[in-house]
Length: 397
Image 1 (tube, rainbow, N blue to C red):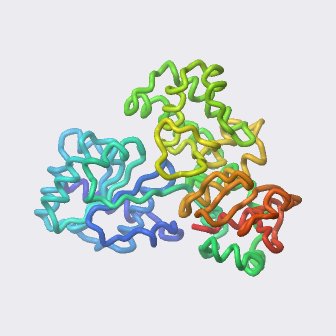
Image 2 (image 1 turned 135 degrees about the vertical axis):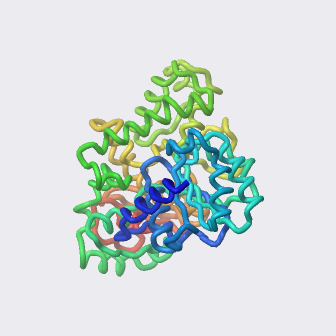
Image 3 (image 1 turned 90 degrees about the horizontal axis):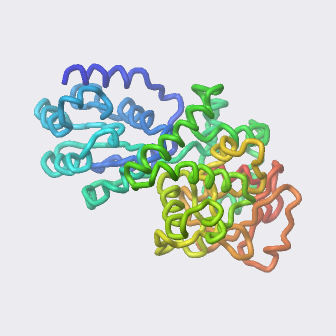
């Protein structure tokens, strides 16, 4: 176990506190069992180590371990936990739980048997986390972590400290907010770069290999996780990739399930199941007229890729700007708000606000008779009245 303490300290010392994600203040760290789930590359390990460095004691009462460490090829997690607690351990940070079989049962047992111990765990396999819900129900508080907001990207890129604004603040005070931000930077100078390569924090580590890394993430989900955890046949991988490409190139994608199942060569029920799996793995986001009580086989009204960076990877020569604008808005709003399909506008937010998304010349024709209706317009620095700059919705988290 001593070697794990040594590795833990080295990991912590090597982490920077220069930039900390906004989710750090969202998490209720007093809970005894905390889960942080999110796609590969969104920064979960960094968050864990920053919490350790910033908050926890720098002694043997704190331990960080990654379950892909070779130590666990000969030892069980519950064995580590028992020895750690006997040596005075109080704070255990467990990374990459999906790399260890039966992790959820052992964490459940640890929670029940060692009330003096706090455990924070992360998992990149969203399917594994979903599968583990039964074991951890009523015990773990699980938070979702997504990629960088436009605000966080700017703060990292430019060493700025732009604050988070609520949706209500943006709606009611967007001109003053724009004025304050534009005193420091020109947001549109960086917005398209963010849409292409700004969502995953590893953009700052491997700029030239960014899309290679992103492609590896997609392939791992499609070729390993879905066959292993959802029983998707390997022979269908090309069809799933074809489906992702169709979504990436659309304007945006409104699924005709019958036509799509014929074109791709699978039956309707299988297609709907596969669409559901793509949503589960955070490769896509689905928009519904009513998002309550959604079933696995319910057809979405619109389908987007989870973020715009995926679209620029998959359809670099055929990306649709309208799709990218809506994808960005959906991604940034959906993190803290209920986003639903609207018949007259593009999005209904929290069953109260209607938004139409477009370019700088977008007019009010489609929403002029609707209360609480707004335009999120690209290519403008300042808004006027109910027309708000699209980039500003990247400051919500």
